[in-house]
Image (cartoon, rainbow, N blue to C red; front, side, top):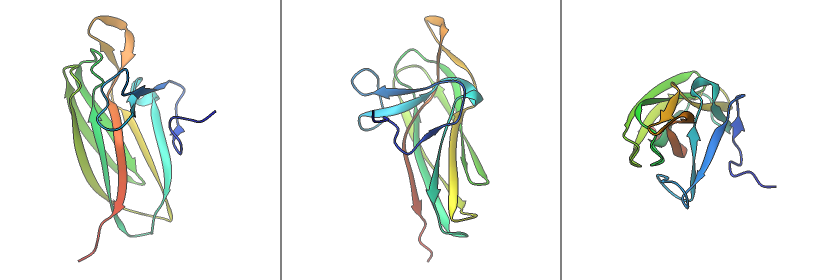
Length: 144
């Protein structure tokens, strides 16, 4: 069996949901992750970095056009740096791309993402939903 999220760690007791472009709106490519259960639903990855080097963390936040609505927020962590990304969802498949800089503290840096809040679908209050995370990229910032 091959994971649809190779290299990622599911760091929670609650589910994250892999969504594919055949059934949902994803910001880019064939799939993305919907963070379903607030802070209890997190994904992480450990990447190689150079200590004291500055990196850019870029990712896309959106909704899956699945009637998930409301004020959402993804919290992202890169080592000791923390970022909060607000997103107002109307359940229509919109997204935005954000970028932050962080300085690596060691040869390995842990990236972690989770949703700050719980969300439900407009027409089904018993079904959890949440912000979509896609296109996570880390690149070194060139020194001038």
